[in-house]
Image (tube, rainbow, N blue to C red; front, side, top):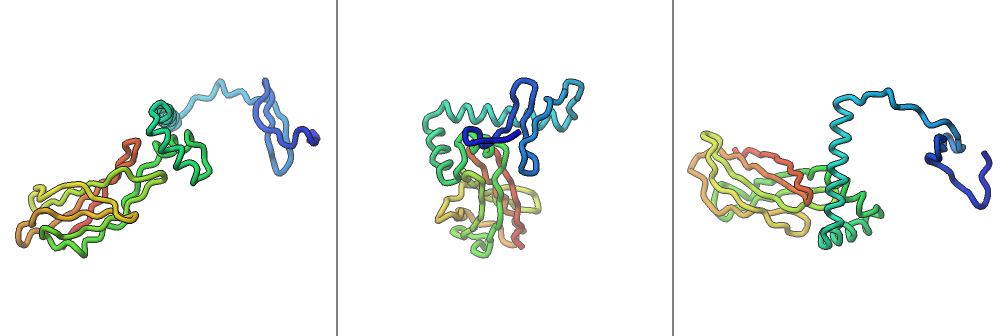
Length: 184
């Protein structure tokens, strides 16, 4: 096949023929017959998850505020807003460092959290537990300050208690990631 000034690239399906770019050349072949292939359980689960992601992206485009958010985010990433919404659904946020150096089990203590997401973290919540009996000492929402999340303690932990801090980061599609850090 020889390309000219009118057609400079060719790929995709046309009837029962497929055009592919392979090692810099355009290759034409018959459409493969995949009718006898049975997907594995993992492939079926992945296909279902992708269908759910596409449904989420469609719901985003039905909501003007959500659509505007993804369209604004897509401009910075040079990616279509629909594809960005699909990717956001498929990827959960990440909780990085949990800095407990400013927290000594006292009210007013500060916990610094690094939480990231491919599009944006919607919220971060904190639960502080006594590790001896798993009782909740306090819980609340962290606030975003200059790209980092900060939680200010509102209650004193029992004297001598061993503490664990549980941080949950969530994104717009509802994905959540939990990470814990022990305070000796």
